[in-house]
Image 1 (cartoon, protein in one colour):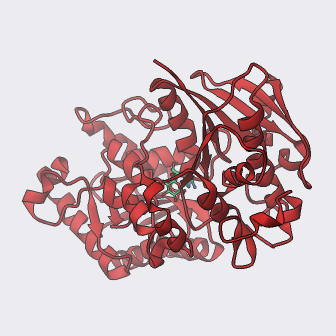
Image 2 (cartoon, rainbow, N blue to C red; image 1 turned 90 degrees about the vertical axis):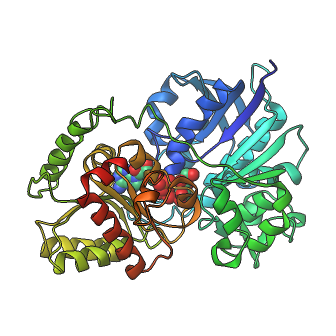
Length: 459
Ligand code: ADP
Ligand code: GLC
């Protein structure tokens, strides 16, 4: 069988650098591609969090300086699963404390255009020059805006024999910078057009990538359709519609080994569909962990995510308030960080109802697993959701999702509409719009189902 050589370019990879689902996908997809017969090399900046890997890696390429992008080295090591890991070594850009996109105060790194311009430029360079051992990619697979400039460098520089793909994980983040950034990035004036990186007088990484890539994928079929319309197109709907012949929706998968309730070191007690009783031990542990009264019977509603309007955390707050004020016996287990305003709203709710609202602000991988395992249902009233991984994790953990019918949530959740017939195929509850009323109705439907033990078991 002939192998396909794929250069996979990403700003995040679990467990080293993760702000959301892209980190998990970048850890899970390359080894699966390898299983299908691809030779995958994953290119990622050598962030400080990857120092231990960098130490044992050896140089396999030099990327020359370009515009204001510094010269960088590419270091290679192998992951345990055999995937080649290529670390883009440029300490001035990446050797910093704090996140991949934001500094410790939560502001964008001021030189993000250079940091991810360098990543994209290095990817394009490797497509032309290959690695020291002669390895040369046939497919360039770029993830989100930080990698999206690579096909632009290919179009407006020396050509390479490579097919390029840009995968959209979230159209809300586009990498838009002032027009003069063009020169710093070493891109010619000729790229500052409708067919290139120009976007309303500015430089857009994602727009450039979507215009120049040979193919585009979005992380679910439904999202691939939605982004061709104004409502969820974030200004790029026209371009995406024009390129629809090469736009594919491919549903994300999850890593079923890392997310396996029968063998998950991060939860309190292992269980599976044949030993569902043990799930209750996780519920008790979760209640304890968040300072809630330990009670097996009270419905426990969990959520984990970026605390943003995208994820509908305001709707969660609103529904929690209504249920708790109305005296419905219910508890919440919430984890996340994001908008200060929304965080404060949730903190105030917790302070007012400490026996009903369990909340941790921050990033906590272990608690995220425990919430998937210990909660009875998982809330995801996203306003838009390119794919979403948490609803898939929650289904794997026997924790039915209650979600808004948008994006990948539609492709991955079968709705329980309140009839016993629908319970046979259903895997969760969906609401038709991201409003407090619609979401509350879906949560109530799930709570009614929960009260009927047989029906709930079926779900
Ligand atoms: P998105 O990528 O839009 O944030 P996804 O559902 O695709 O949403 O993926 C989110 C991933 O990030 C999940 O693995 C989720 O558990 C994780 N995650 C998000 N916020 C936190 C947090 N505060 N603590 C731990 N894990 C988190
Ligand atoms: C993005 C999206 C999310 C998706 C993830 C992985 O962060 O917001 O819906 O699951 O990428 O593709």
